[in-house]
Image (cartoon, rainbow, N blue to C red; front, side):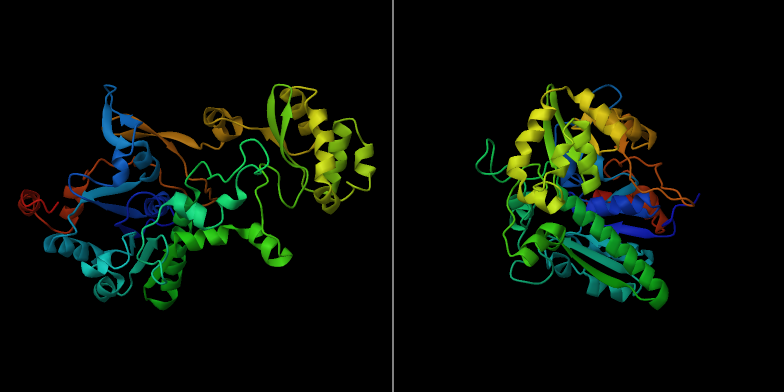
Length: 406
């Protein structure tokens, strides 16, 4: 089956995480992604370790786990964008590119003559996506940003973590760079939408994606809790602010998560723990009442689940149809039979390591395939190949190397 974007060429000038995550999604969908890196150094994340990918002899390579996680499916070339010759190479590459993706500080690529205004004159069909912390406009537009900072500024940390009056209370960041990753997904979506529109208009588009905008959008139900209820959302640990009971419960040998989504499931839960009268108690008969009276409900449920081990409760809850599950470690995730069945972990051939593990794209299609045949590239691995496709001779390419242009 043919990948959906097999006719699309992407010139990826981005680095670190949000931009490369977007271009990896496009590569998984079949696009030819040409990753442009700095000669000698490459993407910053190549050096972010340990851990580093190991070669077949067991020695560390130059590529850290961050880079390996976000650059599958791409071809790597090295070009010095600070030089006129390097800028000319990018302009030549963009002549038949469909997409340019970048995450430089606002104004940097305009200074180099590589912004949307300049490149769209060369290729009017070009879809150009800029990913920044704060967007192309506004009082903070020129400032740098990182995921942790945006989690704080965008309200996420104010609703993440245990309550201040409990042990371990206080704001917490999410354990993965969730804003970077979500920004990458939105950037990929914006690019695909612009490509779809181009089929109607024949014209390219400029896509401006800001991490802070993305995080504000991700506030979702918590934003509406404030905007409609006029109450500032607070940290509630693992407890859901609008639906109860939904949180972790301590069993005799560890914790589980229970997600009761409606009143009928609560009735079943009460039957499972041998306390059917709870569901008939007016204080807990509806979800709204359970949220209001959570303080009196919690101790009853806590005592029940603490009386038996996890396996006991998980078995009974599964049999009864109440959503529940263990809190898996990362190794346990990849041992989960459902994760194994869905093929979320694969190994791809790698020129230095022999093979490299990859966590797969979660999209599945009935009549199209993902492209999963290319491991994260070595620095500059495809420079000769890509520049050869432009018509440059080996001698011309070597001359560029001698002058440290590539």
